[in-house]
Length: 223
Image (cartoon, rainbow, N blue to C red; front, side, top):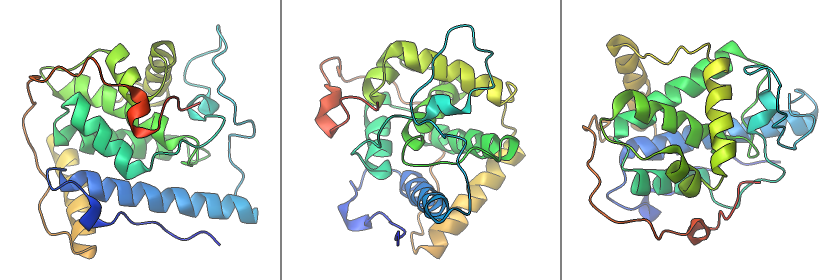
């Protein structure tokens, strides 16, 4: 029997925005539920083959398997979110918008299930697109690939796939953004994490992180 995993607040860096904690908890719960249903046979995943298919010439926006790795990364969702926040300098708002993209994707393609094989790739790809939409300053795809544990070529492909799967609906209006913030804040209240979601401006890059090794957090590769 799979047990829902919730991040321990005491183990979290106090500088980590609370939105990351809640997103990690929500995605962990969704992933655990889906995998439990798949194990029981109640659901069949679209990822019948767990290999990553990057076939050249394949029509974009039709390959749901592209986000699935061969094996689940050892890094938890919470630690992965912390890593992305620490090294990409994305504003907290980007993580909310990234969550909007994932939610839109699941509504447009209900046959696609978030699992331990796909959640990390979905996160880094949705955050990459969100940063391009919101932040004035951001790193390029190659840097996101290095931090996210995938190759630059694969991340380029994932970005295109996600854009086509979303029908390029990447604009998030203020009312929609606020509604998602309210939803996340309610989740915070339910979990006794009462800090309101930060809506911080873009952070300018000051630290030299060119020497960061992906292996640092145990994600030499998300394959």
